[in-house]
Image (tube, rainbow, N blue to C red; front, top):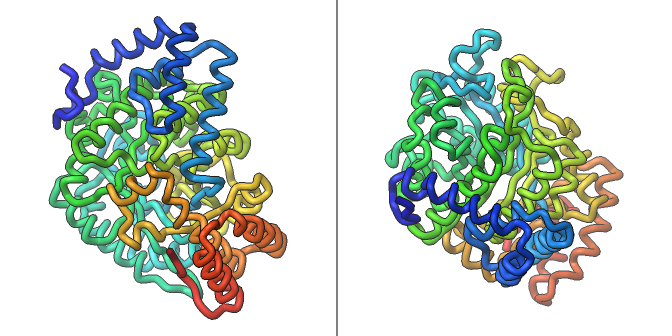
Length: 472
């Protein structure tokens, strides 16, 4: 029985409700009157239900699909402007006891070496990331209670925050580790993490159990209910995601939105971010073995419909996607991307990319500077901002500002100042020149005279080398 406020996974992600929603979408995918009514509601920019959004995803009317894409662009601009936040993943360990059939880290894979970074190696990796210009990391580790206990994760977070190299500093550490207990989530909260990220992989229970035959992750309910425990543990910024291609994308889409609705209903705060990875090649993993992989057109529509349905959420696309695929979805809803990523353990301190410990093949292999320059050329504003997290604008405080479309009053000047830090300290001459032209143009969008004056003052101080880390 479907109950959005239930704490039981099979009740807030109810199979019958999903199938009913998909049937309703099929019935109305060519119904212009129903689609127009849903689009009218969506234009209020307060979101859609999973059932309404499923109709838009199923829509086959070309003119209505054009409206869907156009509205997604408008909503992205209204909530996030042209800002794109940059981050990098940092893989700490590929030891894992789970049997996930789509991941090369699965416990039975004997083809890859198992590697776990020491604290000194983590420092070296962080320095390499700081020398690129990164300020925000997402740490990753396989599930292994012996090799990767919570104590190791906490010590690693402390190490990352402690490294100050030249003008570099990691100001926000997001954490993507296995589902755990409320007690451990409290420890992660106390360690000062940013967002806790956990991909559901698939919301289809029987598929989930087939894809996760062994290990702690095989418990569907425990995994699906993890975000509730994280929020009970004090973490109010959580990130959802599914791995598109494991099951039928429309089912996953509905489940993802139901999960967001559940968090909103129970905690008053929906997901801080939603990620949209697709199955891609990796050691011991062939995407061709998965019958539900999706093409670029479907991927773009998924991004657009998520943006319309959950307008406030940050949306993340990684270097799994090609440069062209990322370009296409940036304007449709994406607000965060990785750059210069290495998906192997110890990958940033190795000149040649180590391929034997990668979790997935990277499609976009450009350097961070190349990605920043590319964004600028596309008139997107690269941002390294971490101010909201450090100013306490998390959870319901962030969401209140975001839903009121007021968050950009802070985000725009913060983005400009963090971009200037990057241009001054790390950028190539060509990127620095292009970036400063964009900064000057973007200053025109700051309407508060006092904020504009302070922003100009701080930009000059950064260029002069006098100070860093200004924030509103």
